[in-house]
Image (cartoon, rainbow, N blue to C red):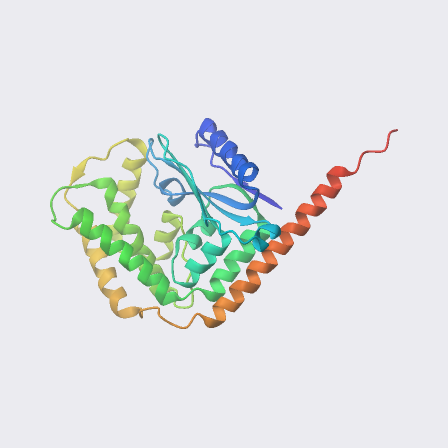
Length: 288
C-alpha cells in the first residue's frame, strides 16, 4: 500500500516541488525511495506562516550496486533554496545511526506528513526501531540536544526569540515522555500529541497553548523573557534525565546482526516488487 498524507494547509506549489525533486532522486540516482516525509516545525505541529519545508527521505540502493567495488555516499543532498530544504539518508546509514542512539530516523518514521512511502517499509522499520533502540541512548540524544539549545538560546537569561523556546521545550517533553513510558523508546514526533501524553504541569500547558496559537498566526513572535513555567519545566526535566537514564553504551552486537538481516530483507523485497511491477507493465493488453 502506498502512503501519502499532506495537510490541506500546505502550499500546493511547494508540495508539487517536493514531488518533482523526489522523482529526480529516483531518476538520477537509480535508487528505491520507500519513504519521504516532512520534518521540522510543519511535522512537529507548530509551524509559522513562513516556516520552511523540510523534506527528508530514506533511500535504498539496488542489489547490483552492492557488488560494485566503488564506494558511494550514504547521503543525497540538495542546496538550500529559499524556504525549501531536502536531503536523505541511505537505509544503511539510518540503521547504523539508530543503533548508536540517534533518534532522527525514529522521528522520520513518526512524521504525520508523508510525501510518499511504502506502508510495509515504514511499519517494518518502525517495528525494528522499537525492538533494537536503546532507551538510554535515545534519551541521551534528546538530553544533549536540549541542553545545547538551552545553552545557545537561553544561556544568559535575557530576552530571547520566542520561537526558539520550542527548540529546548520539545527535547524536554520527549525526555518526560520517555520517563513516563518506561518500556518505550519511540516517542511521538507530533508536539501536541507528545505534550498530551507526557502530562505536563497546568501552567506549562497554558503557556504552550498561547505560544502555539501566536506562532501559527504570525511570521515573528518577537523577543521576551523566557516564561518561568517553561524554564522550570526544561531545567527540571534535564536534571531528572541526567539521573534517570544511563549512558546508553550497551552492546550493539545482537542489534548489528538484526540490522544486517533487516537490510538484506528490504533490498530483496524491493527488488522483487520492482521486477513484478516491470513485468506487469511489459504485458501488452490483448486487442478486443
